[in-house]
Image 1: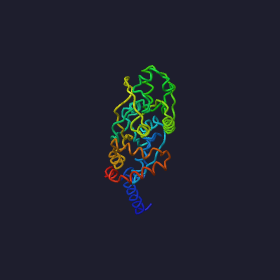
Image 2: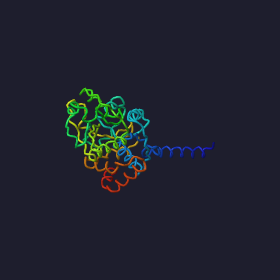
Image 3: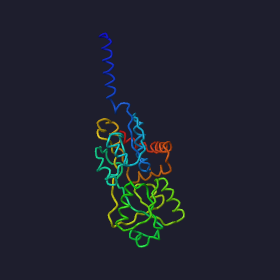
Image 4: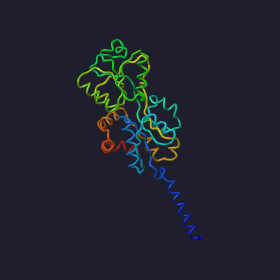
Length: 282
């Protein structure tokens, strides 16, 4: 190899190295873990779209909640934007090699809920007569924080209802059916979620202290994310919703379950709230 050719290759290698180290991980696609829950979809797809619109490739990786934290801990995925600090503590305790990009929402709550027309106010009322709700408890997957707390509460109250677990979208349809028919029912509930307002659900008083009543949702990243993706980390750290803002945002997405529909509705919301989005990406 001639000296001239060697010099050319050396310069090319240096330029490639500089390009590869510039920006947020150059052309590497950021992987965002996602659980198929309404709040999770709303935040993770929002993050994907905002990153893409700022020149950072991103993709959604759908899996269950425990796999998300396990893969985040191992660095197999880069982000999860729906971390409930107290609600997911069982996972954060085990999979703790992660970085916190800050809160996206404050004021979360977990509990048991009933429709407003159901004339009871506490879990104790359910225990007195299980026939008033058919001795059935409706919920989502048992590895969800609200279900772990609900099962703990049921044991504390020495109650043994039949637990019907289903995917969140199917649960919502079941609640809609029972509400339209004015049936009494009990379900695991969490705030924020559009179904609270849509179906006029009320939380039941709990004396067992099994439920979290003031939690926060944070944006979590794999270890080293801030250093590897400074631009992405800065943008994501700015994303925050007030209670009213998040309620309205979730209502916009309440019927969106397919990726194309979710992204379309999020883009429409972003277009309608340019000042909010601009503050995030400044």
